Length: 116
Image 1 (tube, helix red, strand yellow):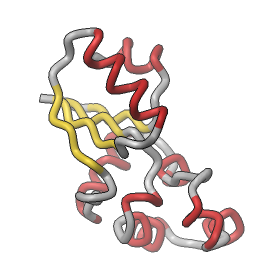
Image 2: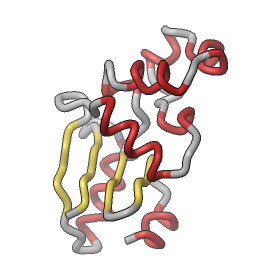
Image 3: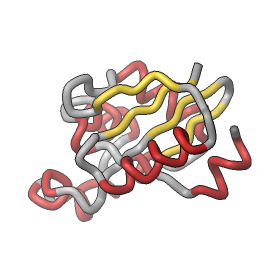
């Protein structure tokens, strides 16, 4: 079963959920604000995704901007970045779709079609 981690008020997450529903794809929904990803989950998802850790940050979010992470991330270790991401679900880019052997961060319909 796919894990769909999202913030229900996020319009991109709403589009992604609609796409999953319209395509009859079953998933477990998890609200990233109420049930934030753990350090272990983020570490595993990062490894499986093949993405840079910066891709896991919600760069348009208020917390990202208020912490000046644009300037701080380049000087942080992977461990520091993962620890920071695990402190608040709103720091994490969404939606995240976790399947068997893949992790998709953000919603790009063509990528989702290819993996599912």
